[in-house]
Length: 198
Image (cartoon, rainbow, N blue to C red):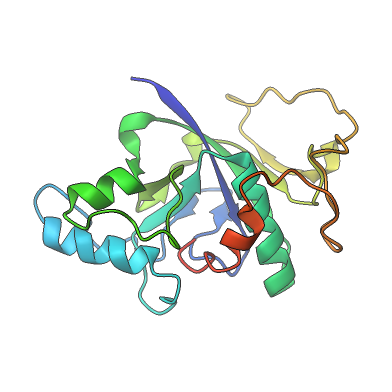
């Protein structure tokens, strides 16, 4: 089974935040989610999870993305909107441990994910992201490459930190001014309305 490298941007106001002893636990971790035996319930849960206006119904799902660029864009929006410290977790997981959102949406009879909600690279975990799957957690600073002091947690069994390098001027941008950064798919604009279900 192949592995996926996923990223999750979050702050302490997100639906699920990182804990050093448990990893990520969903706000609705006690809610059953079984697309096989209860597809109707699963469809309702997924719809609620993807609805950016839903901030009141706890979700058993935890969103991640395959795109580091999208995680960076989401981190920037969280930082500017909530004025909170933002982190990005890097996760490596077997493909059969997560659900690809667009595929699951179709499988549950919901058709295509509406364009304004859709992230073709989004995957969701059910109930938790185990500590064993998390490679590292880094405080987001708006730079392309984190520095040593930005690492707040590393999994010694998985982490092989690259040598520090100055950030690329093409890939870096200011957390405050939003200066030049790599955003080929206009992720910043898309992320402005997509925070709640994370």
